[in-house]
Image (cartoon, rainbow, N blue to C red; front, side):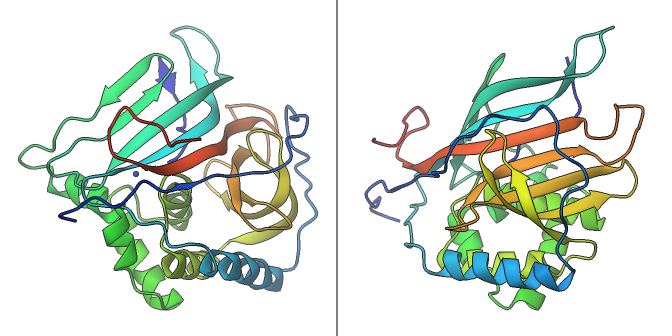
Length: 278
């Protein structure tokens, strides 16, 4: 199977499990977005992200122990194709358990056709291990909280996958989508994301479950795909993401959706087969 894009998205005594959940009104899902979104002026990016950052800074500090896992359940869609068949959007549910000690304890990803327990990094995979460690709660908590300093650090960390501004934006989306962010780090992360060149604010967007909101977005100039990080318009909680083509390409017509995510559940668990208590 060929997969064009992926739905994003990882003490001596363990703290009690804690849970945070994403809420929002579920609406009928459009097959494709109206590409001519109503764009705010560039200065609107700072205003939107300041609201999101303020919301993040006021959130509870969820404790994640070194022997625990960050659990995320998402409703995802991406472009897939069997051999000899055209690409089409396939939808599924995805669960991930991100280890907080990736050098010793392995993470897990479960979705249709896959139930993967990632192999422990082998010799020569230092960059991979560093990338996994960068996504742990302890590493996120240690990041600089000055937006400019954080943006510089994120560029260095995202270089594991790519060096473009679009890779950087996607890297931020991965942290937001499948991590638990300390409040101060989350606030700084959103303020830093607003400084990425090419980022715009959208006053109308939908996540992968059709929940309406506002979005931080960036268009990849090479493949003409726009990626949106969607937030609830009232609470500014992160809902999910949506990506689609902004002009006709070999992958599809303008407006074709290429990737979606809706975060449905997020929390901390003690074992790789547990889910947060309801």
